[in-house]
Length: 276
Image (cartoon, rainbow, N blue to C red; front, side, top):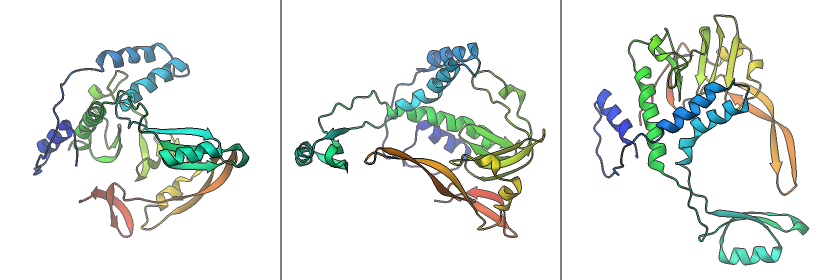
């Protein structure tokens, strides 16, 4: 397993893990994003959310670090005649191809001579995500709160956070909802009614989540319960040169991909960490 040092030291601090290091790399430590992020944040504050500049600044802030972790792409795609395709297949590793009939072939092949320089620096992307996990873990593992659900950058707890951590400044949390009744079923799948009477339903990969009744969502807490839904999805076909909208089934149920489900009286009541 490969981990970054912030994760490593955070694990040692809170748990009595027996970890053996086989190998590793040392990198120079510095604040390389500070000025860049602060400048983009200033731009966001200058424009309302309806302005494209706000969105552009937000995307640059949230996704720039990921560019450092991108895998080099050494494949090439091209429209070729049948004769050109035969020559390519003799000299290169063809990974995919689509026969376009009289129009030739659309081919994907590996070109070992292709320049794949893309300024990747995986250690930077790894460090950013590692520090983010360490930061959110301070709230997830805080005994002062009862944690109901968490995601990459969010937590659902039983009481208000210290005002020190909440606000509009960079790095602070934002209060999204206060639920009076809520159910969490899986990562990025939850539903609830706020104290203001608004119904919130989030289902990853399903566009019509708000149309799913709250009682239907709560019924999924029963062991082996599921909801068979359907929604329209777009499918593109290069060989047929078209885009089709087709109805696709979506099976909604509690999952144990990240944590074990704890059942009582045939109903999910809690989760616990997976043991590897």
